Length: 248
Ligand SMILES: Nc1ncnc2c1ncn2[C@@H]1O[C@H](COP(=O)(O)OP(=O)(O)OP(=O)(O)O)[C@@H](O)[C@H]1O
Image 1 (cartoon, rainbow, N blue to C red):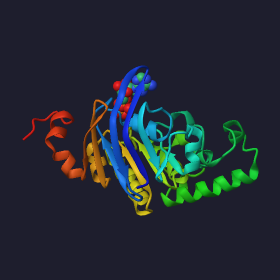
Image 2 (cartoon, helix red, strand yellow):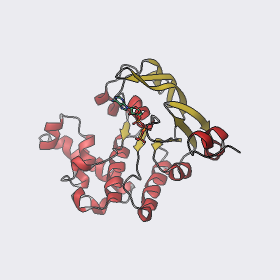
Image 3 (cartoon, protein in one colour):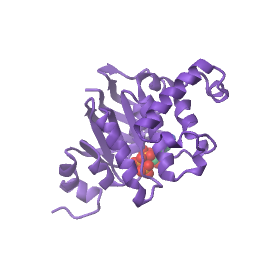
Image 4 (tube, rainbow, N blue to C red):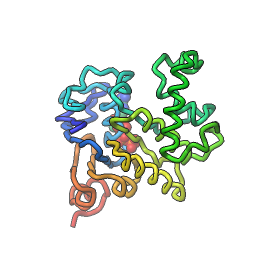
């Protein structure tokens, strides 16, 4: 098993945010997570990325405890994460956005591209990731000129370039029109075809169900059910608690 959370609890500001979260993700598998606003989906990605600490339980990556890892070292383990929004990077080109994630020097050094050898290496790896998602034609375009779908795809390429072991996708369809969601699905399908292990969260349960191997439904910081996507979505507790429908 590549990633495992065992009985994880998280508290932020003295408030219980996650309780008793346990799941595992095998190599090459996509775990989808659904749940209403505030269920704790993003916090789970924050736990895996070592952005928030746990107060109980354990995170294991490649069978090893992941406890002491700092957020800026997560990338060194081959874990890439897409952002909910790329708005702060609007002036960058697509290639710069993807390269930036691959540069190991400080952000300031990276922005100035002072280390040319590393910058060239980062750019060629970034270009390879863009080509995998068929985005090579956008490489030199600033993000601000592109549709929100292409901006999302560029950020997925950034996560793919870093995430050789594990890709965390945070709301890839948010702000993307219904007509452009197919392109996001296609990119995700390509990542899965490449054998990447993925944790996917999105507000659109239909999108998640269609694009995962295993589904976890959450509510109020707890796991309601985990298993085959159709089984989870048709279970009484998920219908009742998440979809607001009466159980059969
Ligand atoms: N830094 C923080 N301090 C205190 N509470 C927080 C913090 N971050 C998140 N929360 C709370 O934790 C709960 C879970 O938030 P989280 O963002 O993980 O949910 P989510 O399922 O991703 O929701 P959404 O779909 O709206 O993004 C929410 O009640 C949120 O207000």
